[in-house]
Image (tube, rainbow, N blue to C red; front, side, top):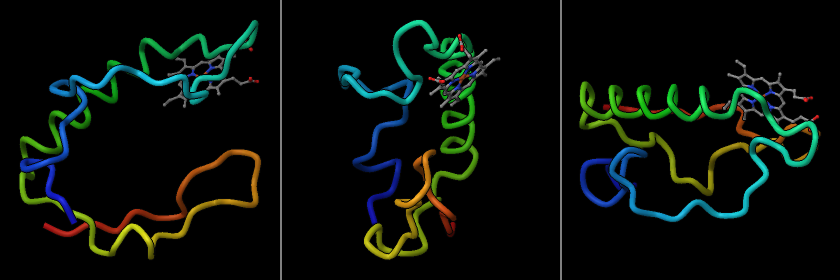
Length: 82
Ligand code: HEM
């Protein structure tokens, strides 16, 4: 597992160009709260990785349970350790 402090950039330090994902929907019903949500997530991840710099996944990504059979995709759990 890659630690956030080594290879994984936090959202505020990432130089990645946003891809054409659909996390906030698209068209007339595109998420009205997406700007607020992006700011909240930047604060959350900045704070989390600053306060717990040793945080890392407790299991390999291949062992994590994803919701492949429901309309809202996501993870059932994300066990971490530090
Ligand atoms: C990570 C956080 C969030 C995600 C992933 C998300 C995702 C989405 C998605 C995918 C839709 C489109 C649903 C559809 O096509 O029917 C949507 C709609 C909407 N979201 Fe969010 N959302 C987030 C946070 C928020 C927040 C913080 C607010 C308000 C403070 C918000 C308010 C809304 C509203 C009002 C709509 C309906 C827009 C419409 O139907 O015209 N969302 N959201």
